[in-house]
Length: 233
Ligand SMILES: *Cc1c(COP(=O)(O)O)cnc(C)c1O
Image 1 (tube, rainbow, N blue to C red):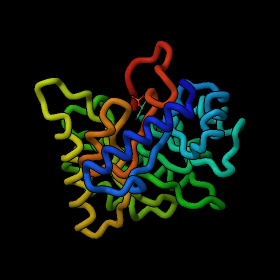
Image 2 (image 1 turned 180 degrees about the vertical axis):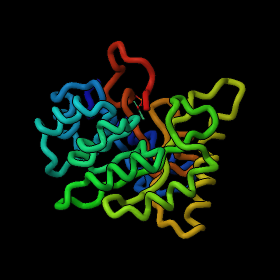
Image 3 (image 1 turned 30 degrees about the vertical axis):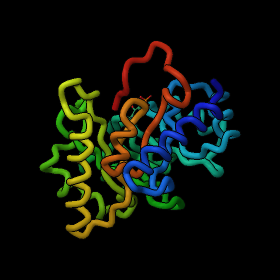
Image 4 (image 1 turned 90 degrees about the horizontal axis):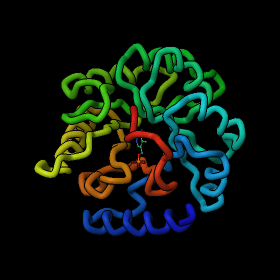
C-alpha cells in the first residue's frame, strides 16, 4: 500500500471515530510519525498532502529537516528529551511533546533562537500504565504546566501521554479519559490549552472517543518499522 492509500483509509477511520464521538473530523489533527523512515518515504507523504511529521531521534530528524526543509512543514519532537539534546530541539523543531520536567522546559526556552516563534510544547504525563519511564506524575502536571506557561521561549499547547497497550481485561479508554480529565482541570484553572496529544496506530479510535485533538500515527501510515520495538518516548 502506498502512503496515499494508507492516508486515505486512515482518514476514513478518523472521520468514522469522530462521527461516533459527535465531533467534527477537523477537530483531530494527524501527526505522521516518520521515525526510522527514509527521506523518500517522507517525500511520498508530502506529495500526498501530509505536512506535520513526528520524530523521536534528534540526529535522524536533523538529517530529514536538512533534506526537506522547514518550508511549509511542521516538525514535532515526540520522544524522551535528554538535556544534551535540548539545543538542537529548540533550534530545529516546531513542537516538542515530551516535556516532563521543568529543567528541560527551561533549557528549551533559553535555547529557542530569538528569531523563531516560541516552541510549542505539550507536557507529557505518566498516566497509569505509561509504556515508557518518562512523563511527570499526574499530581505534578498542573504545577509543571503553570511553570512552563510562564517561560518566554515556549508556548504551552497541551498534554501528551503514551499509555501502554491495554491488557485485554482492562478498559482501553481509561488512560485517555484520565488525561482528558487533567486537561479539563488545567483549562478550568485558567491555562489556555488546546491540544490533547494521545492515540497511536493501535488505539487512536479510543483516544478520539475520549477527546484527542492530535493523534500520532506511524505504522498505520508508513507500514511496520523494520526491527524496531514498540514506541519509545
Ligand atoms: C513511535 C511513536 C508513535 C507512533 O507509533 P505507531 O504505533 O507506529 O503509530 C507515537 N507516539 C510516540 C511517542 C512514538 O514514539
